[in-house]
Image (cartoon, rainbow, N blue to C red; front, side, top):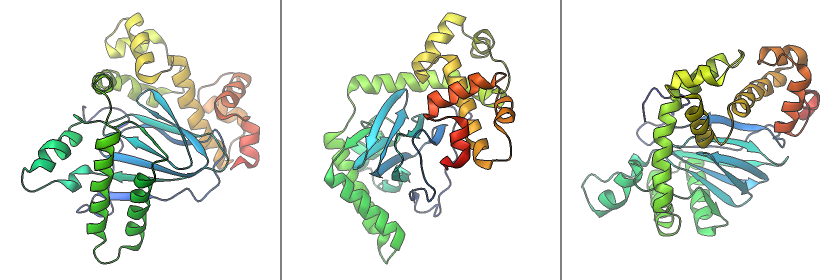
Length: 292
C-alpha cells in the first residue's frame, strides 16, 4: 500500500530494537457508543484482548463483535475502527512488528510462516473467541512487558511464536478471504485521496460528484466502490467522521452544542442531535453532561 495513503498511523515503539508494545485499558470510564479509535491502519499486527464488556471492531468493512475473553486479530495493513457497546469495557491492545521474529537464516520458520505473514500472504481470522491457550499467551506477554525481568525478551518471543502457531493451525483465513483482502487493499489505495480530502474538509458540503472526480471514477462506480470498502454510504461515512470529531469536542466542554454542530459541518442542530444519538446511543446533551 502507498506509504502516503490516508489513515496510516505512525507506530513508534518504546524500544525500536524490540518492536512490541501493549496499551493498558483506558483509565477513564468508557461508555456504550464511545469511539475507541478512528479509522486507521498500520504495518504492524494488532491484538485486542477483551477483559470485560463488549465492543465492535470493524476490520476492513466487516464488523466484529467482541466480548470478555475474546481476542480480535487485526492483520497488517488492515483498516480498522472500533467503538464500545457497553459501559464496562476494558481491553488491552498489543501492537507487534512481526519482523521481531525474523530468523537470521532462511529456515523453514522464516520461509513458511514469518515472511508470508509479513507480506500478507497469510492472513488470520479477525475473531478468536474464548481460546484459553491464546488468552494465556496474551496474558503472559502483558505480564512480561510490565515486569521486564531478566530474560523477558526471550519469554515474550516464545509466547509470540506460540500465538502464531495457534493462529496458523486454527485461524488462517480462507483463500476466498485472502483474495477479498487483497482486493480491499487495492480499493483502499484507490480511495486514499478521497479519505484524506474528507478528513481535511469534513466541515464543508461534500458531494459524490466532487469526490468521484478526486478518485477518477464515475459517480456510479465511486458510490459502489465506496460502499464496498467502508460498508457505508458517503453521507453515512461523512456523518461518522463529523460525529467522532464532535465527540472529542464535547469532552472539552468549552463549546456549547450548537457551536459544536456548526464546527463539525452540521447546519441543522436537530439533524446533528438525531445523528449523534443514532451513532452514540445517547444525545449530545447526555454525553456532555457527565457521560465521560
